[in-house]
Image (cartoon, rainbow, N blue to C red):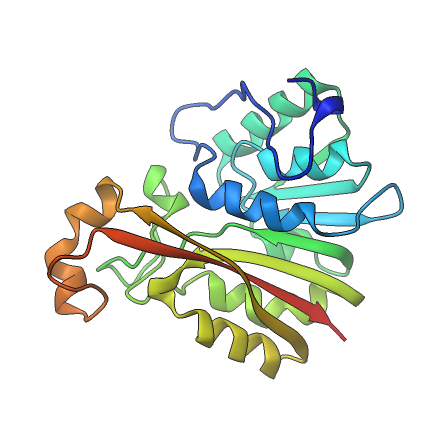
Length: 228
């Protein structure tokens, strides 16, 4: 599929993904559906936090937005740049922490699919594929930073779209964004089967009260927040 023939809610296909780079999955697709409902175009400045393959950033760029994508993983940065080149789409891809790399800039739209899987280690991983999903004991190691940074990232009227697991507490996300001065709510939900990471942590998740004994499905949520 050509980047110029994308339809609402779809993602680019045949994306390059270097080893260790998170490939688009159910959470990416759910976020793409929410993104399709936003009004973006040539005058829109958009930011993707944790771009991975660049799938969502490319979706926004194909609709005419000026897109900046940020990732802490060098393989992800290289992957997103390669996919942008293959599709001949203008995409600015930066390496590093999203807050540091966007300091002083504001956007009409911020899209984020951050790490959100609860993990026994309190410290976030600094390397390896786990960096794309491990997010501390409550899964909010990156989510909370995005919530706190949203007022500095968005222009008045700007929108944040954030996807994460229901295990992390959708209500907590909405409350923290509201406390930061944004109008927030859940706009999409989906249930997906547990993947290998969650299955490998079943006993720990149960001990933390994050999963029941027969849990096999994970709820995904997209939170939309508008900066008033």
